[in-house]
Each structure stands twice: as structure tokens, then as C-alpha cells.
Length: 136
Ligand SMILES: Nc1nc2c([nH]c(=O)n2[C@H]2C[C@H](O)[C@@H](COP(=O)(O)OP(=O)(O)OP(=O)(O)O)O2)c(=O)[nH]1
Ligand SMILES: [Mg+2]
Image (cartoon, rainbow, N blue to C red; front, top):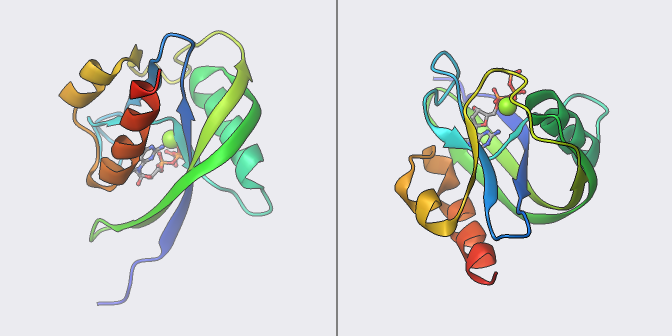
């Protein structure tokens, strides 16, 4: 079988002042549908990671990124799809969260985060985020 093309995805870790992280639920019809995710989406041609992050966060949840720094990258092969997740921590943002795609979303504390189901590629991301949340 030919190798699946790798999809480059910008992923946002947004933590609020009460040690909660912003997550939303993928629609059933999407790849990895019904699972929780950190907001984000495909990087478009000619776009920087930072502008992809800002565009996706705004399209999905109405927030704008003021500053962000790289956290980790995860390459994962789902069999039907190969993804490269470029995960950034959004250190400053503005706006009020609004579900622009009608999706469920929430600010999750560490306990809540550990109780929810995420795609397989998220295992290393969750480890890093849990450390950030535990740090307060
Ligand atoms: N945003 C995001 N995507 C993730 C996470 N974990 C994970 O495996 N993915 C995968 C699922 C998808 O295959 C891919 C994201 O692509 P997507 O389809 O949501 O991209 P998009 O937001 O541009 O959506 P669309 O307009 O193409 O529907 O990355 C995660 O935590 N956040
Ligand atoms: Mg998306």
C-alpha cells in the first residue's frame, strides 16, 4: 500500500488562570470523531504555525492568539491517516470562547482531563499538559 500523505496540524494548548485547559469534542463525522481534542487544524500552504494556530482557534472557538510557544511535535500513523501534530502553548490570548461549529467545549482541570477520551496521538501531549496543569 502507498504511504498515506502526512497532514500537518497546528494544535493549541490554552490554559486559563485557574489551571484548566481548553478542549473541545470532535464531531462524529470527522476523523477520530466523538473524541476530545485540543483545538486546531490543518496548516494551509504559505501559512506559519502561529497564523494557523490563530486562524483555527478563531474559526473554532472565537479566540485570538497574542503569543504562543512550541511545546512538542507528535507524528502518528492512524493507518487511514498520518498526522504531524505541532503543539503550541498559547501564553496570551483574547476573546470570549464561543462554539462556532456547534461543538461541545470545556475548560478541563487535570482530573476532568484524565477522565475523557482523546485520539491515540494525544498520549504524549496529555503527559505534557498534565505536568503544566499540576504546576498550577
Ligand atoms: N485539532 C486536533 N487534531 C487532532 C488532535 N489529535 C489528533 O489526532 N488530531 C488529528 C485529527 C485529524 O486527523 C487532524 C486534525 O485535522 P482536522 O480535520 O480537525 O483539521 P481542520 O480543523 O482543519 O478540519 P477540517 O476543516 O478539515 O474539517 O489531527 C488534537 O488534539 N487536536
Ligand atoms: Mg480542527
